[in-house]
Length: 163
Image (cartoon, rainbow, N blue to C red; front, top):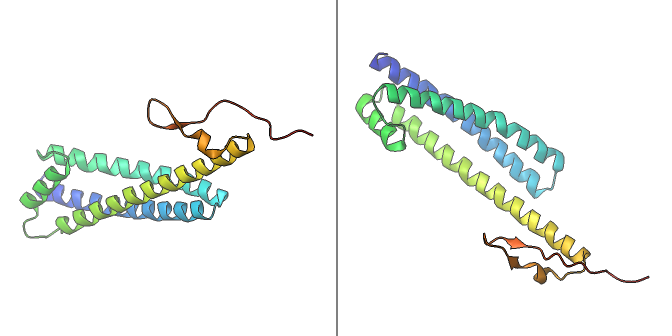
């Protein structure tokens, strides 16, 4: 494959990745709003919507990595930046700007996914505390840690009262 074809293909793949990452970020934001509003159908819709977008991104990344390897570059960020410096010196394909936008979008997706994961963890903890209270345990008695450092509920059951 000629150098110009490599550049055009990489540029097109980066643009497709930006579109997929933008759609994924929108879905992650929708998921966050659904989690905050405890909207179960919207949460389920967001979860279902994330999978094809993540799969699409994965395919596009593998394609651009294949082209980079064929051109003799590594596929890590330093390799991509080296490729851009070597092959788009005049900014004809504006690879540097496109790559920068793609990296920023990827970082936003990662951050939003971590935020969503934290909301899910807090919700799970609240449910565990409520169940603990219903079982007759004060929530503080649940703070036992296992070997991995995670909290583990005690197995002791108590009645809530007598009739």
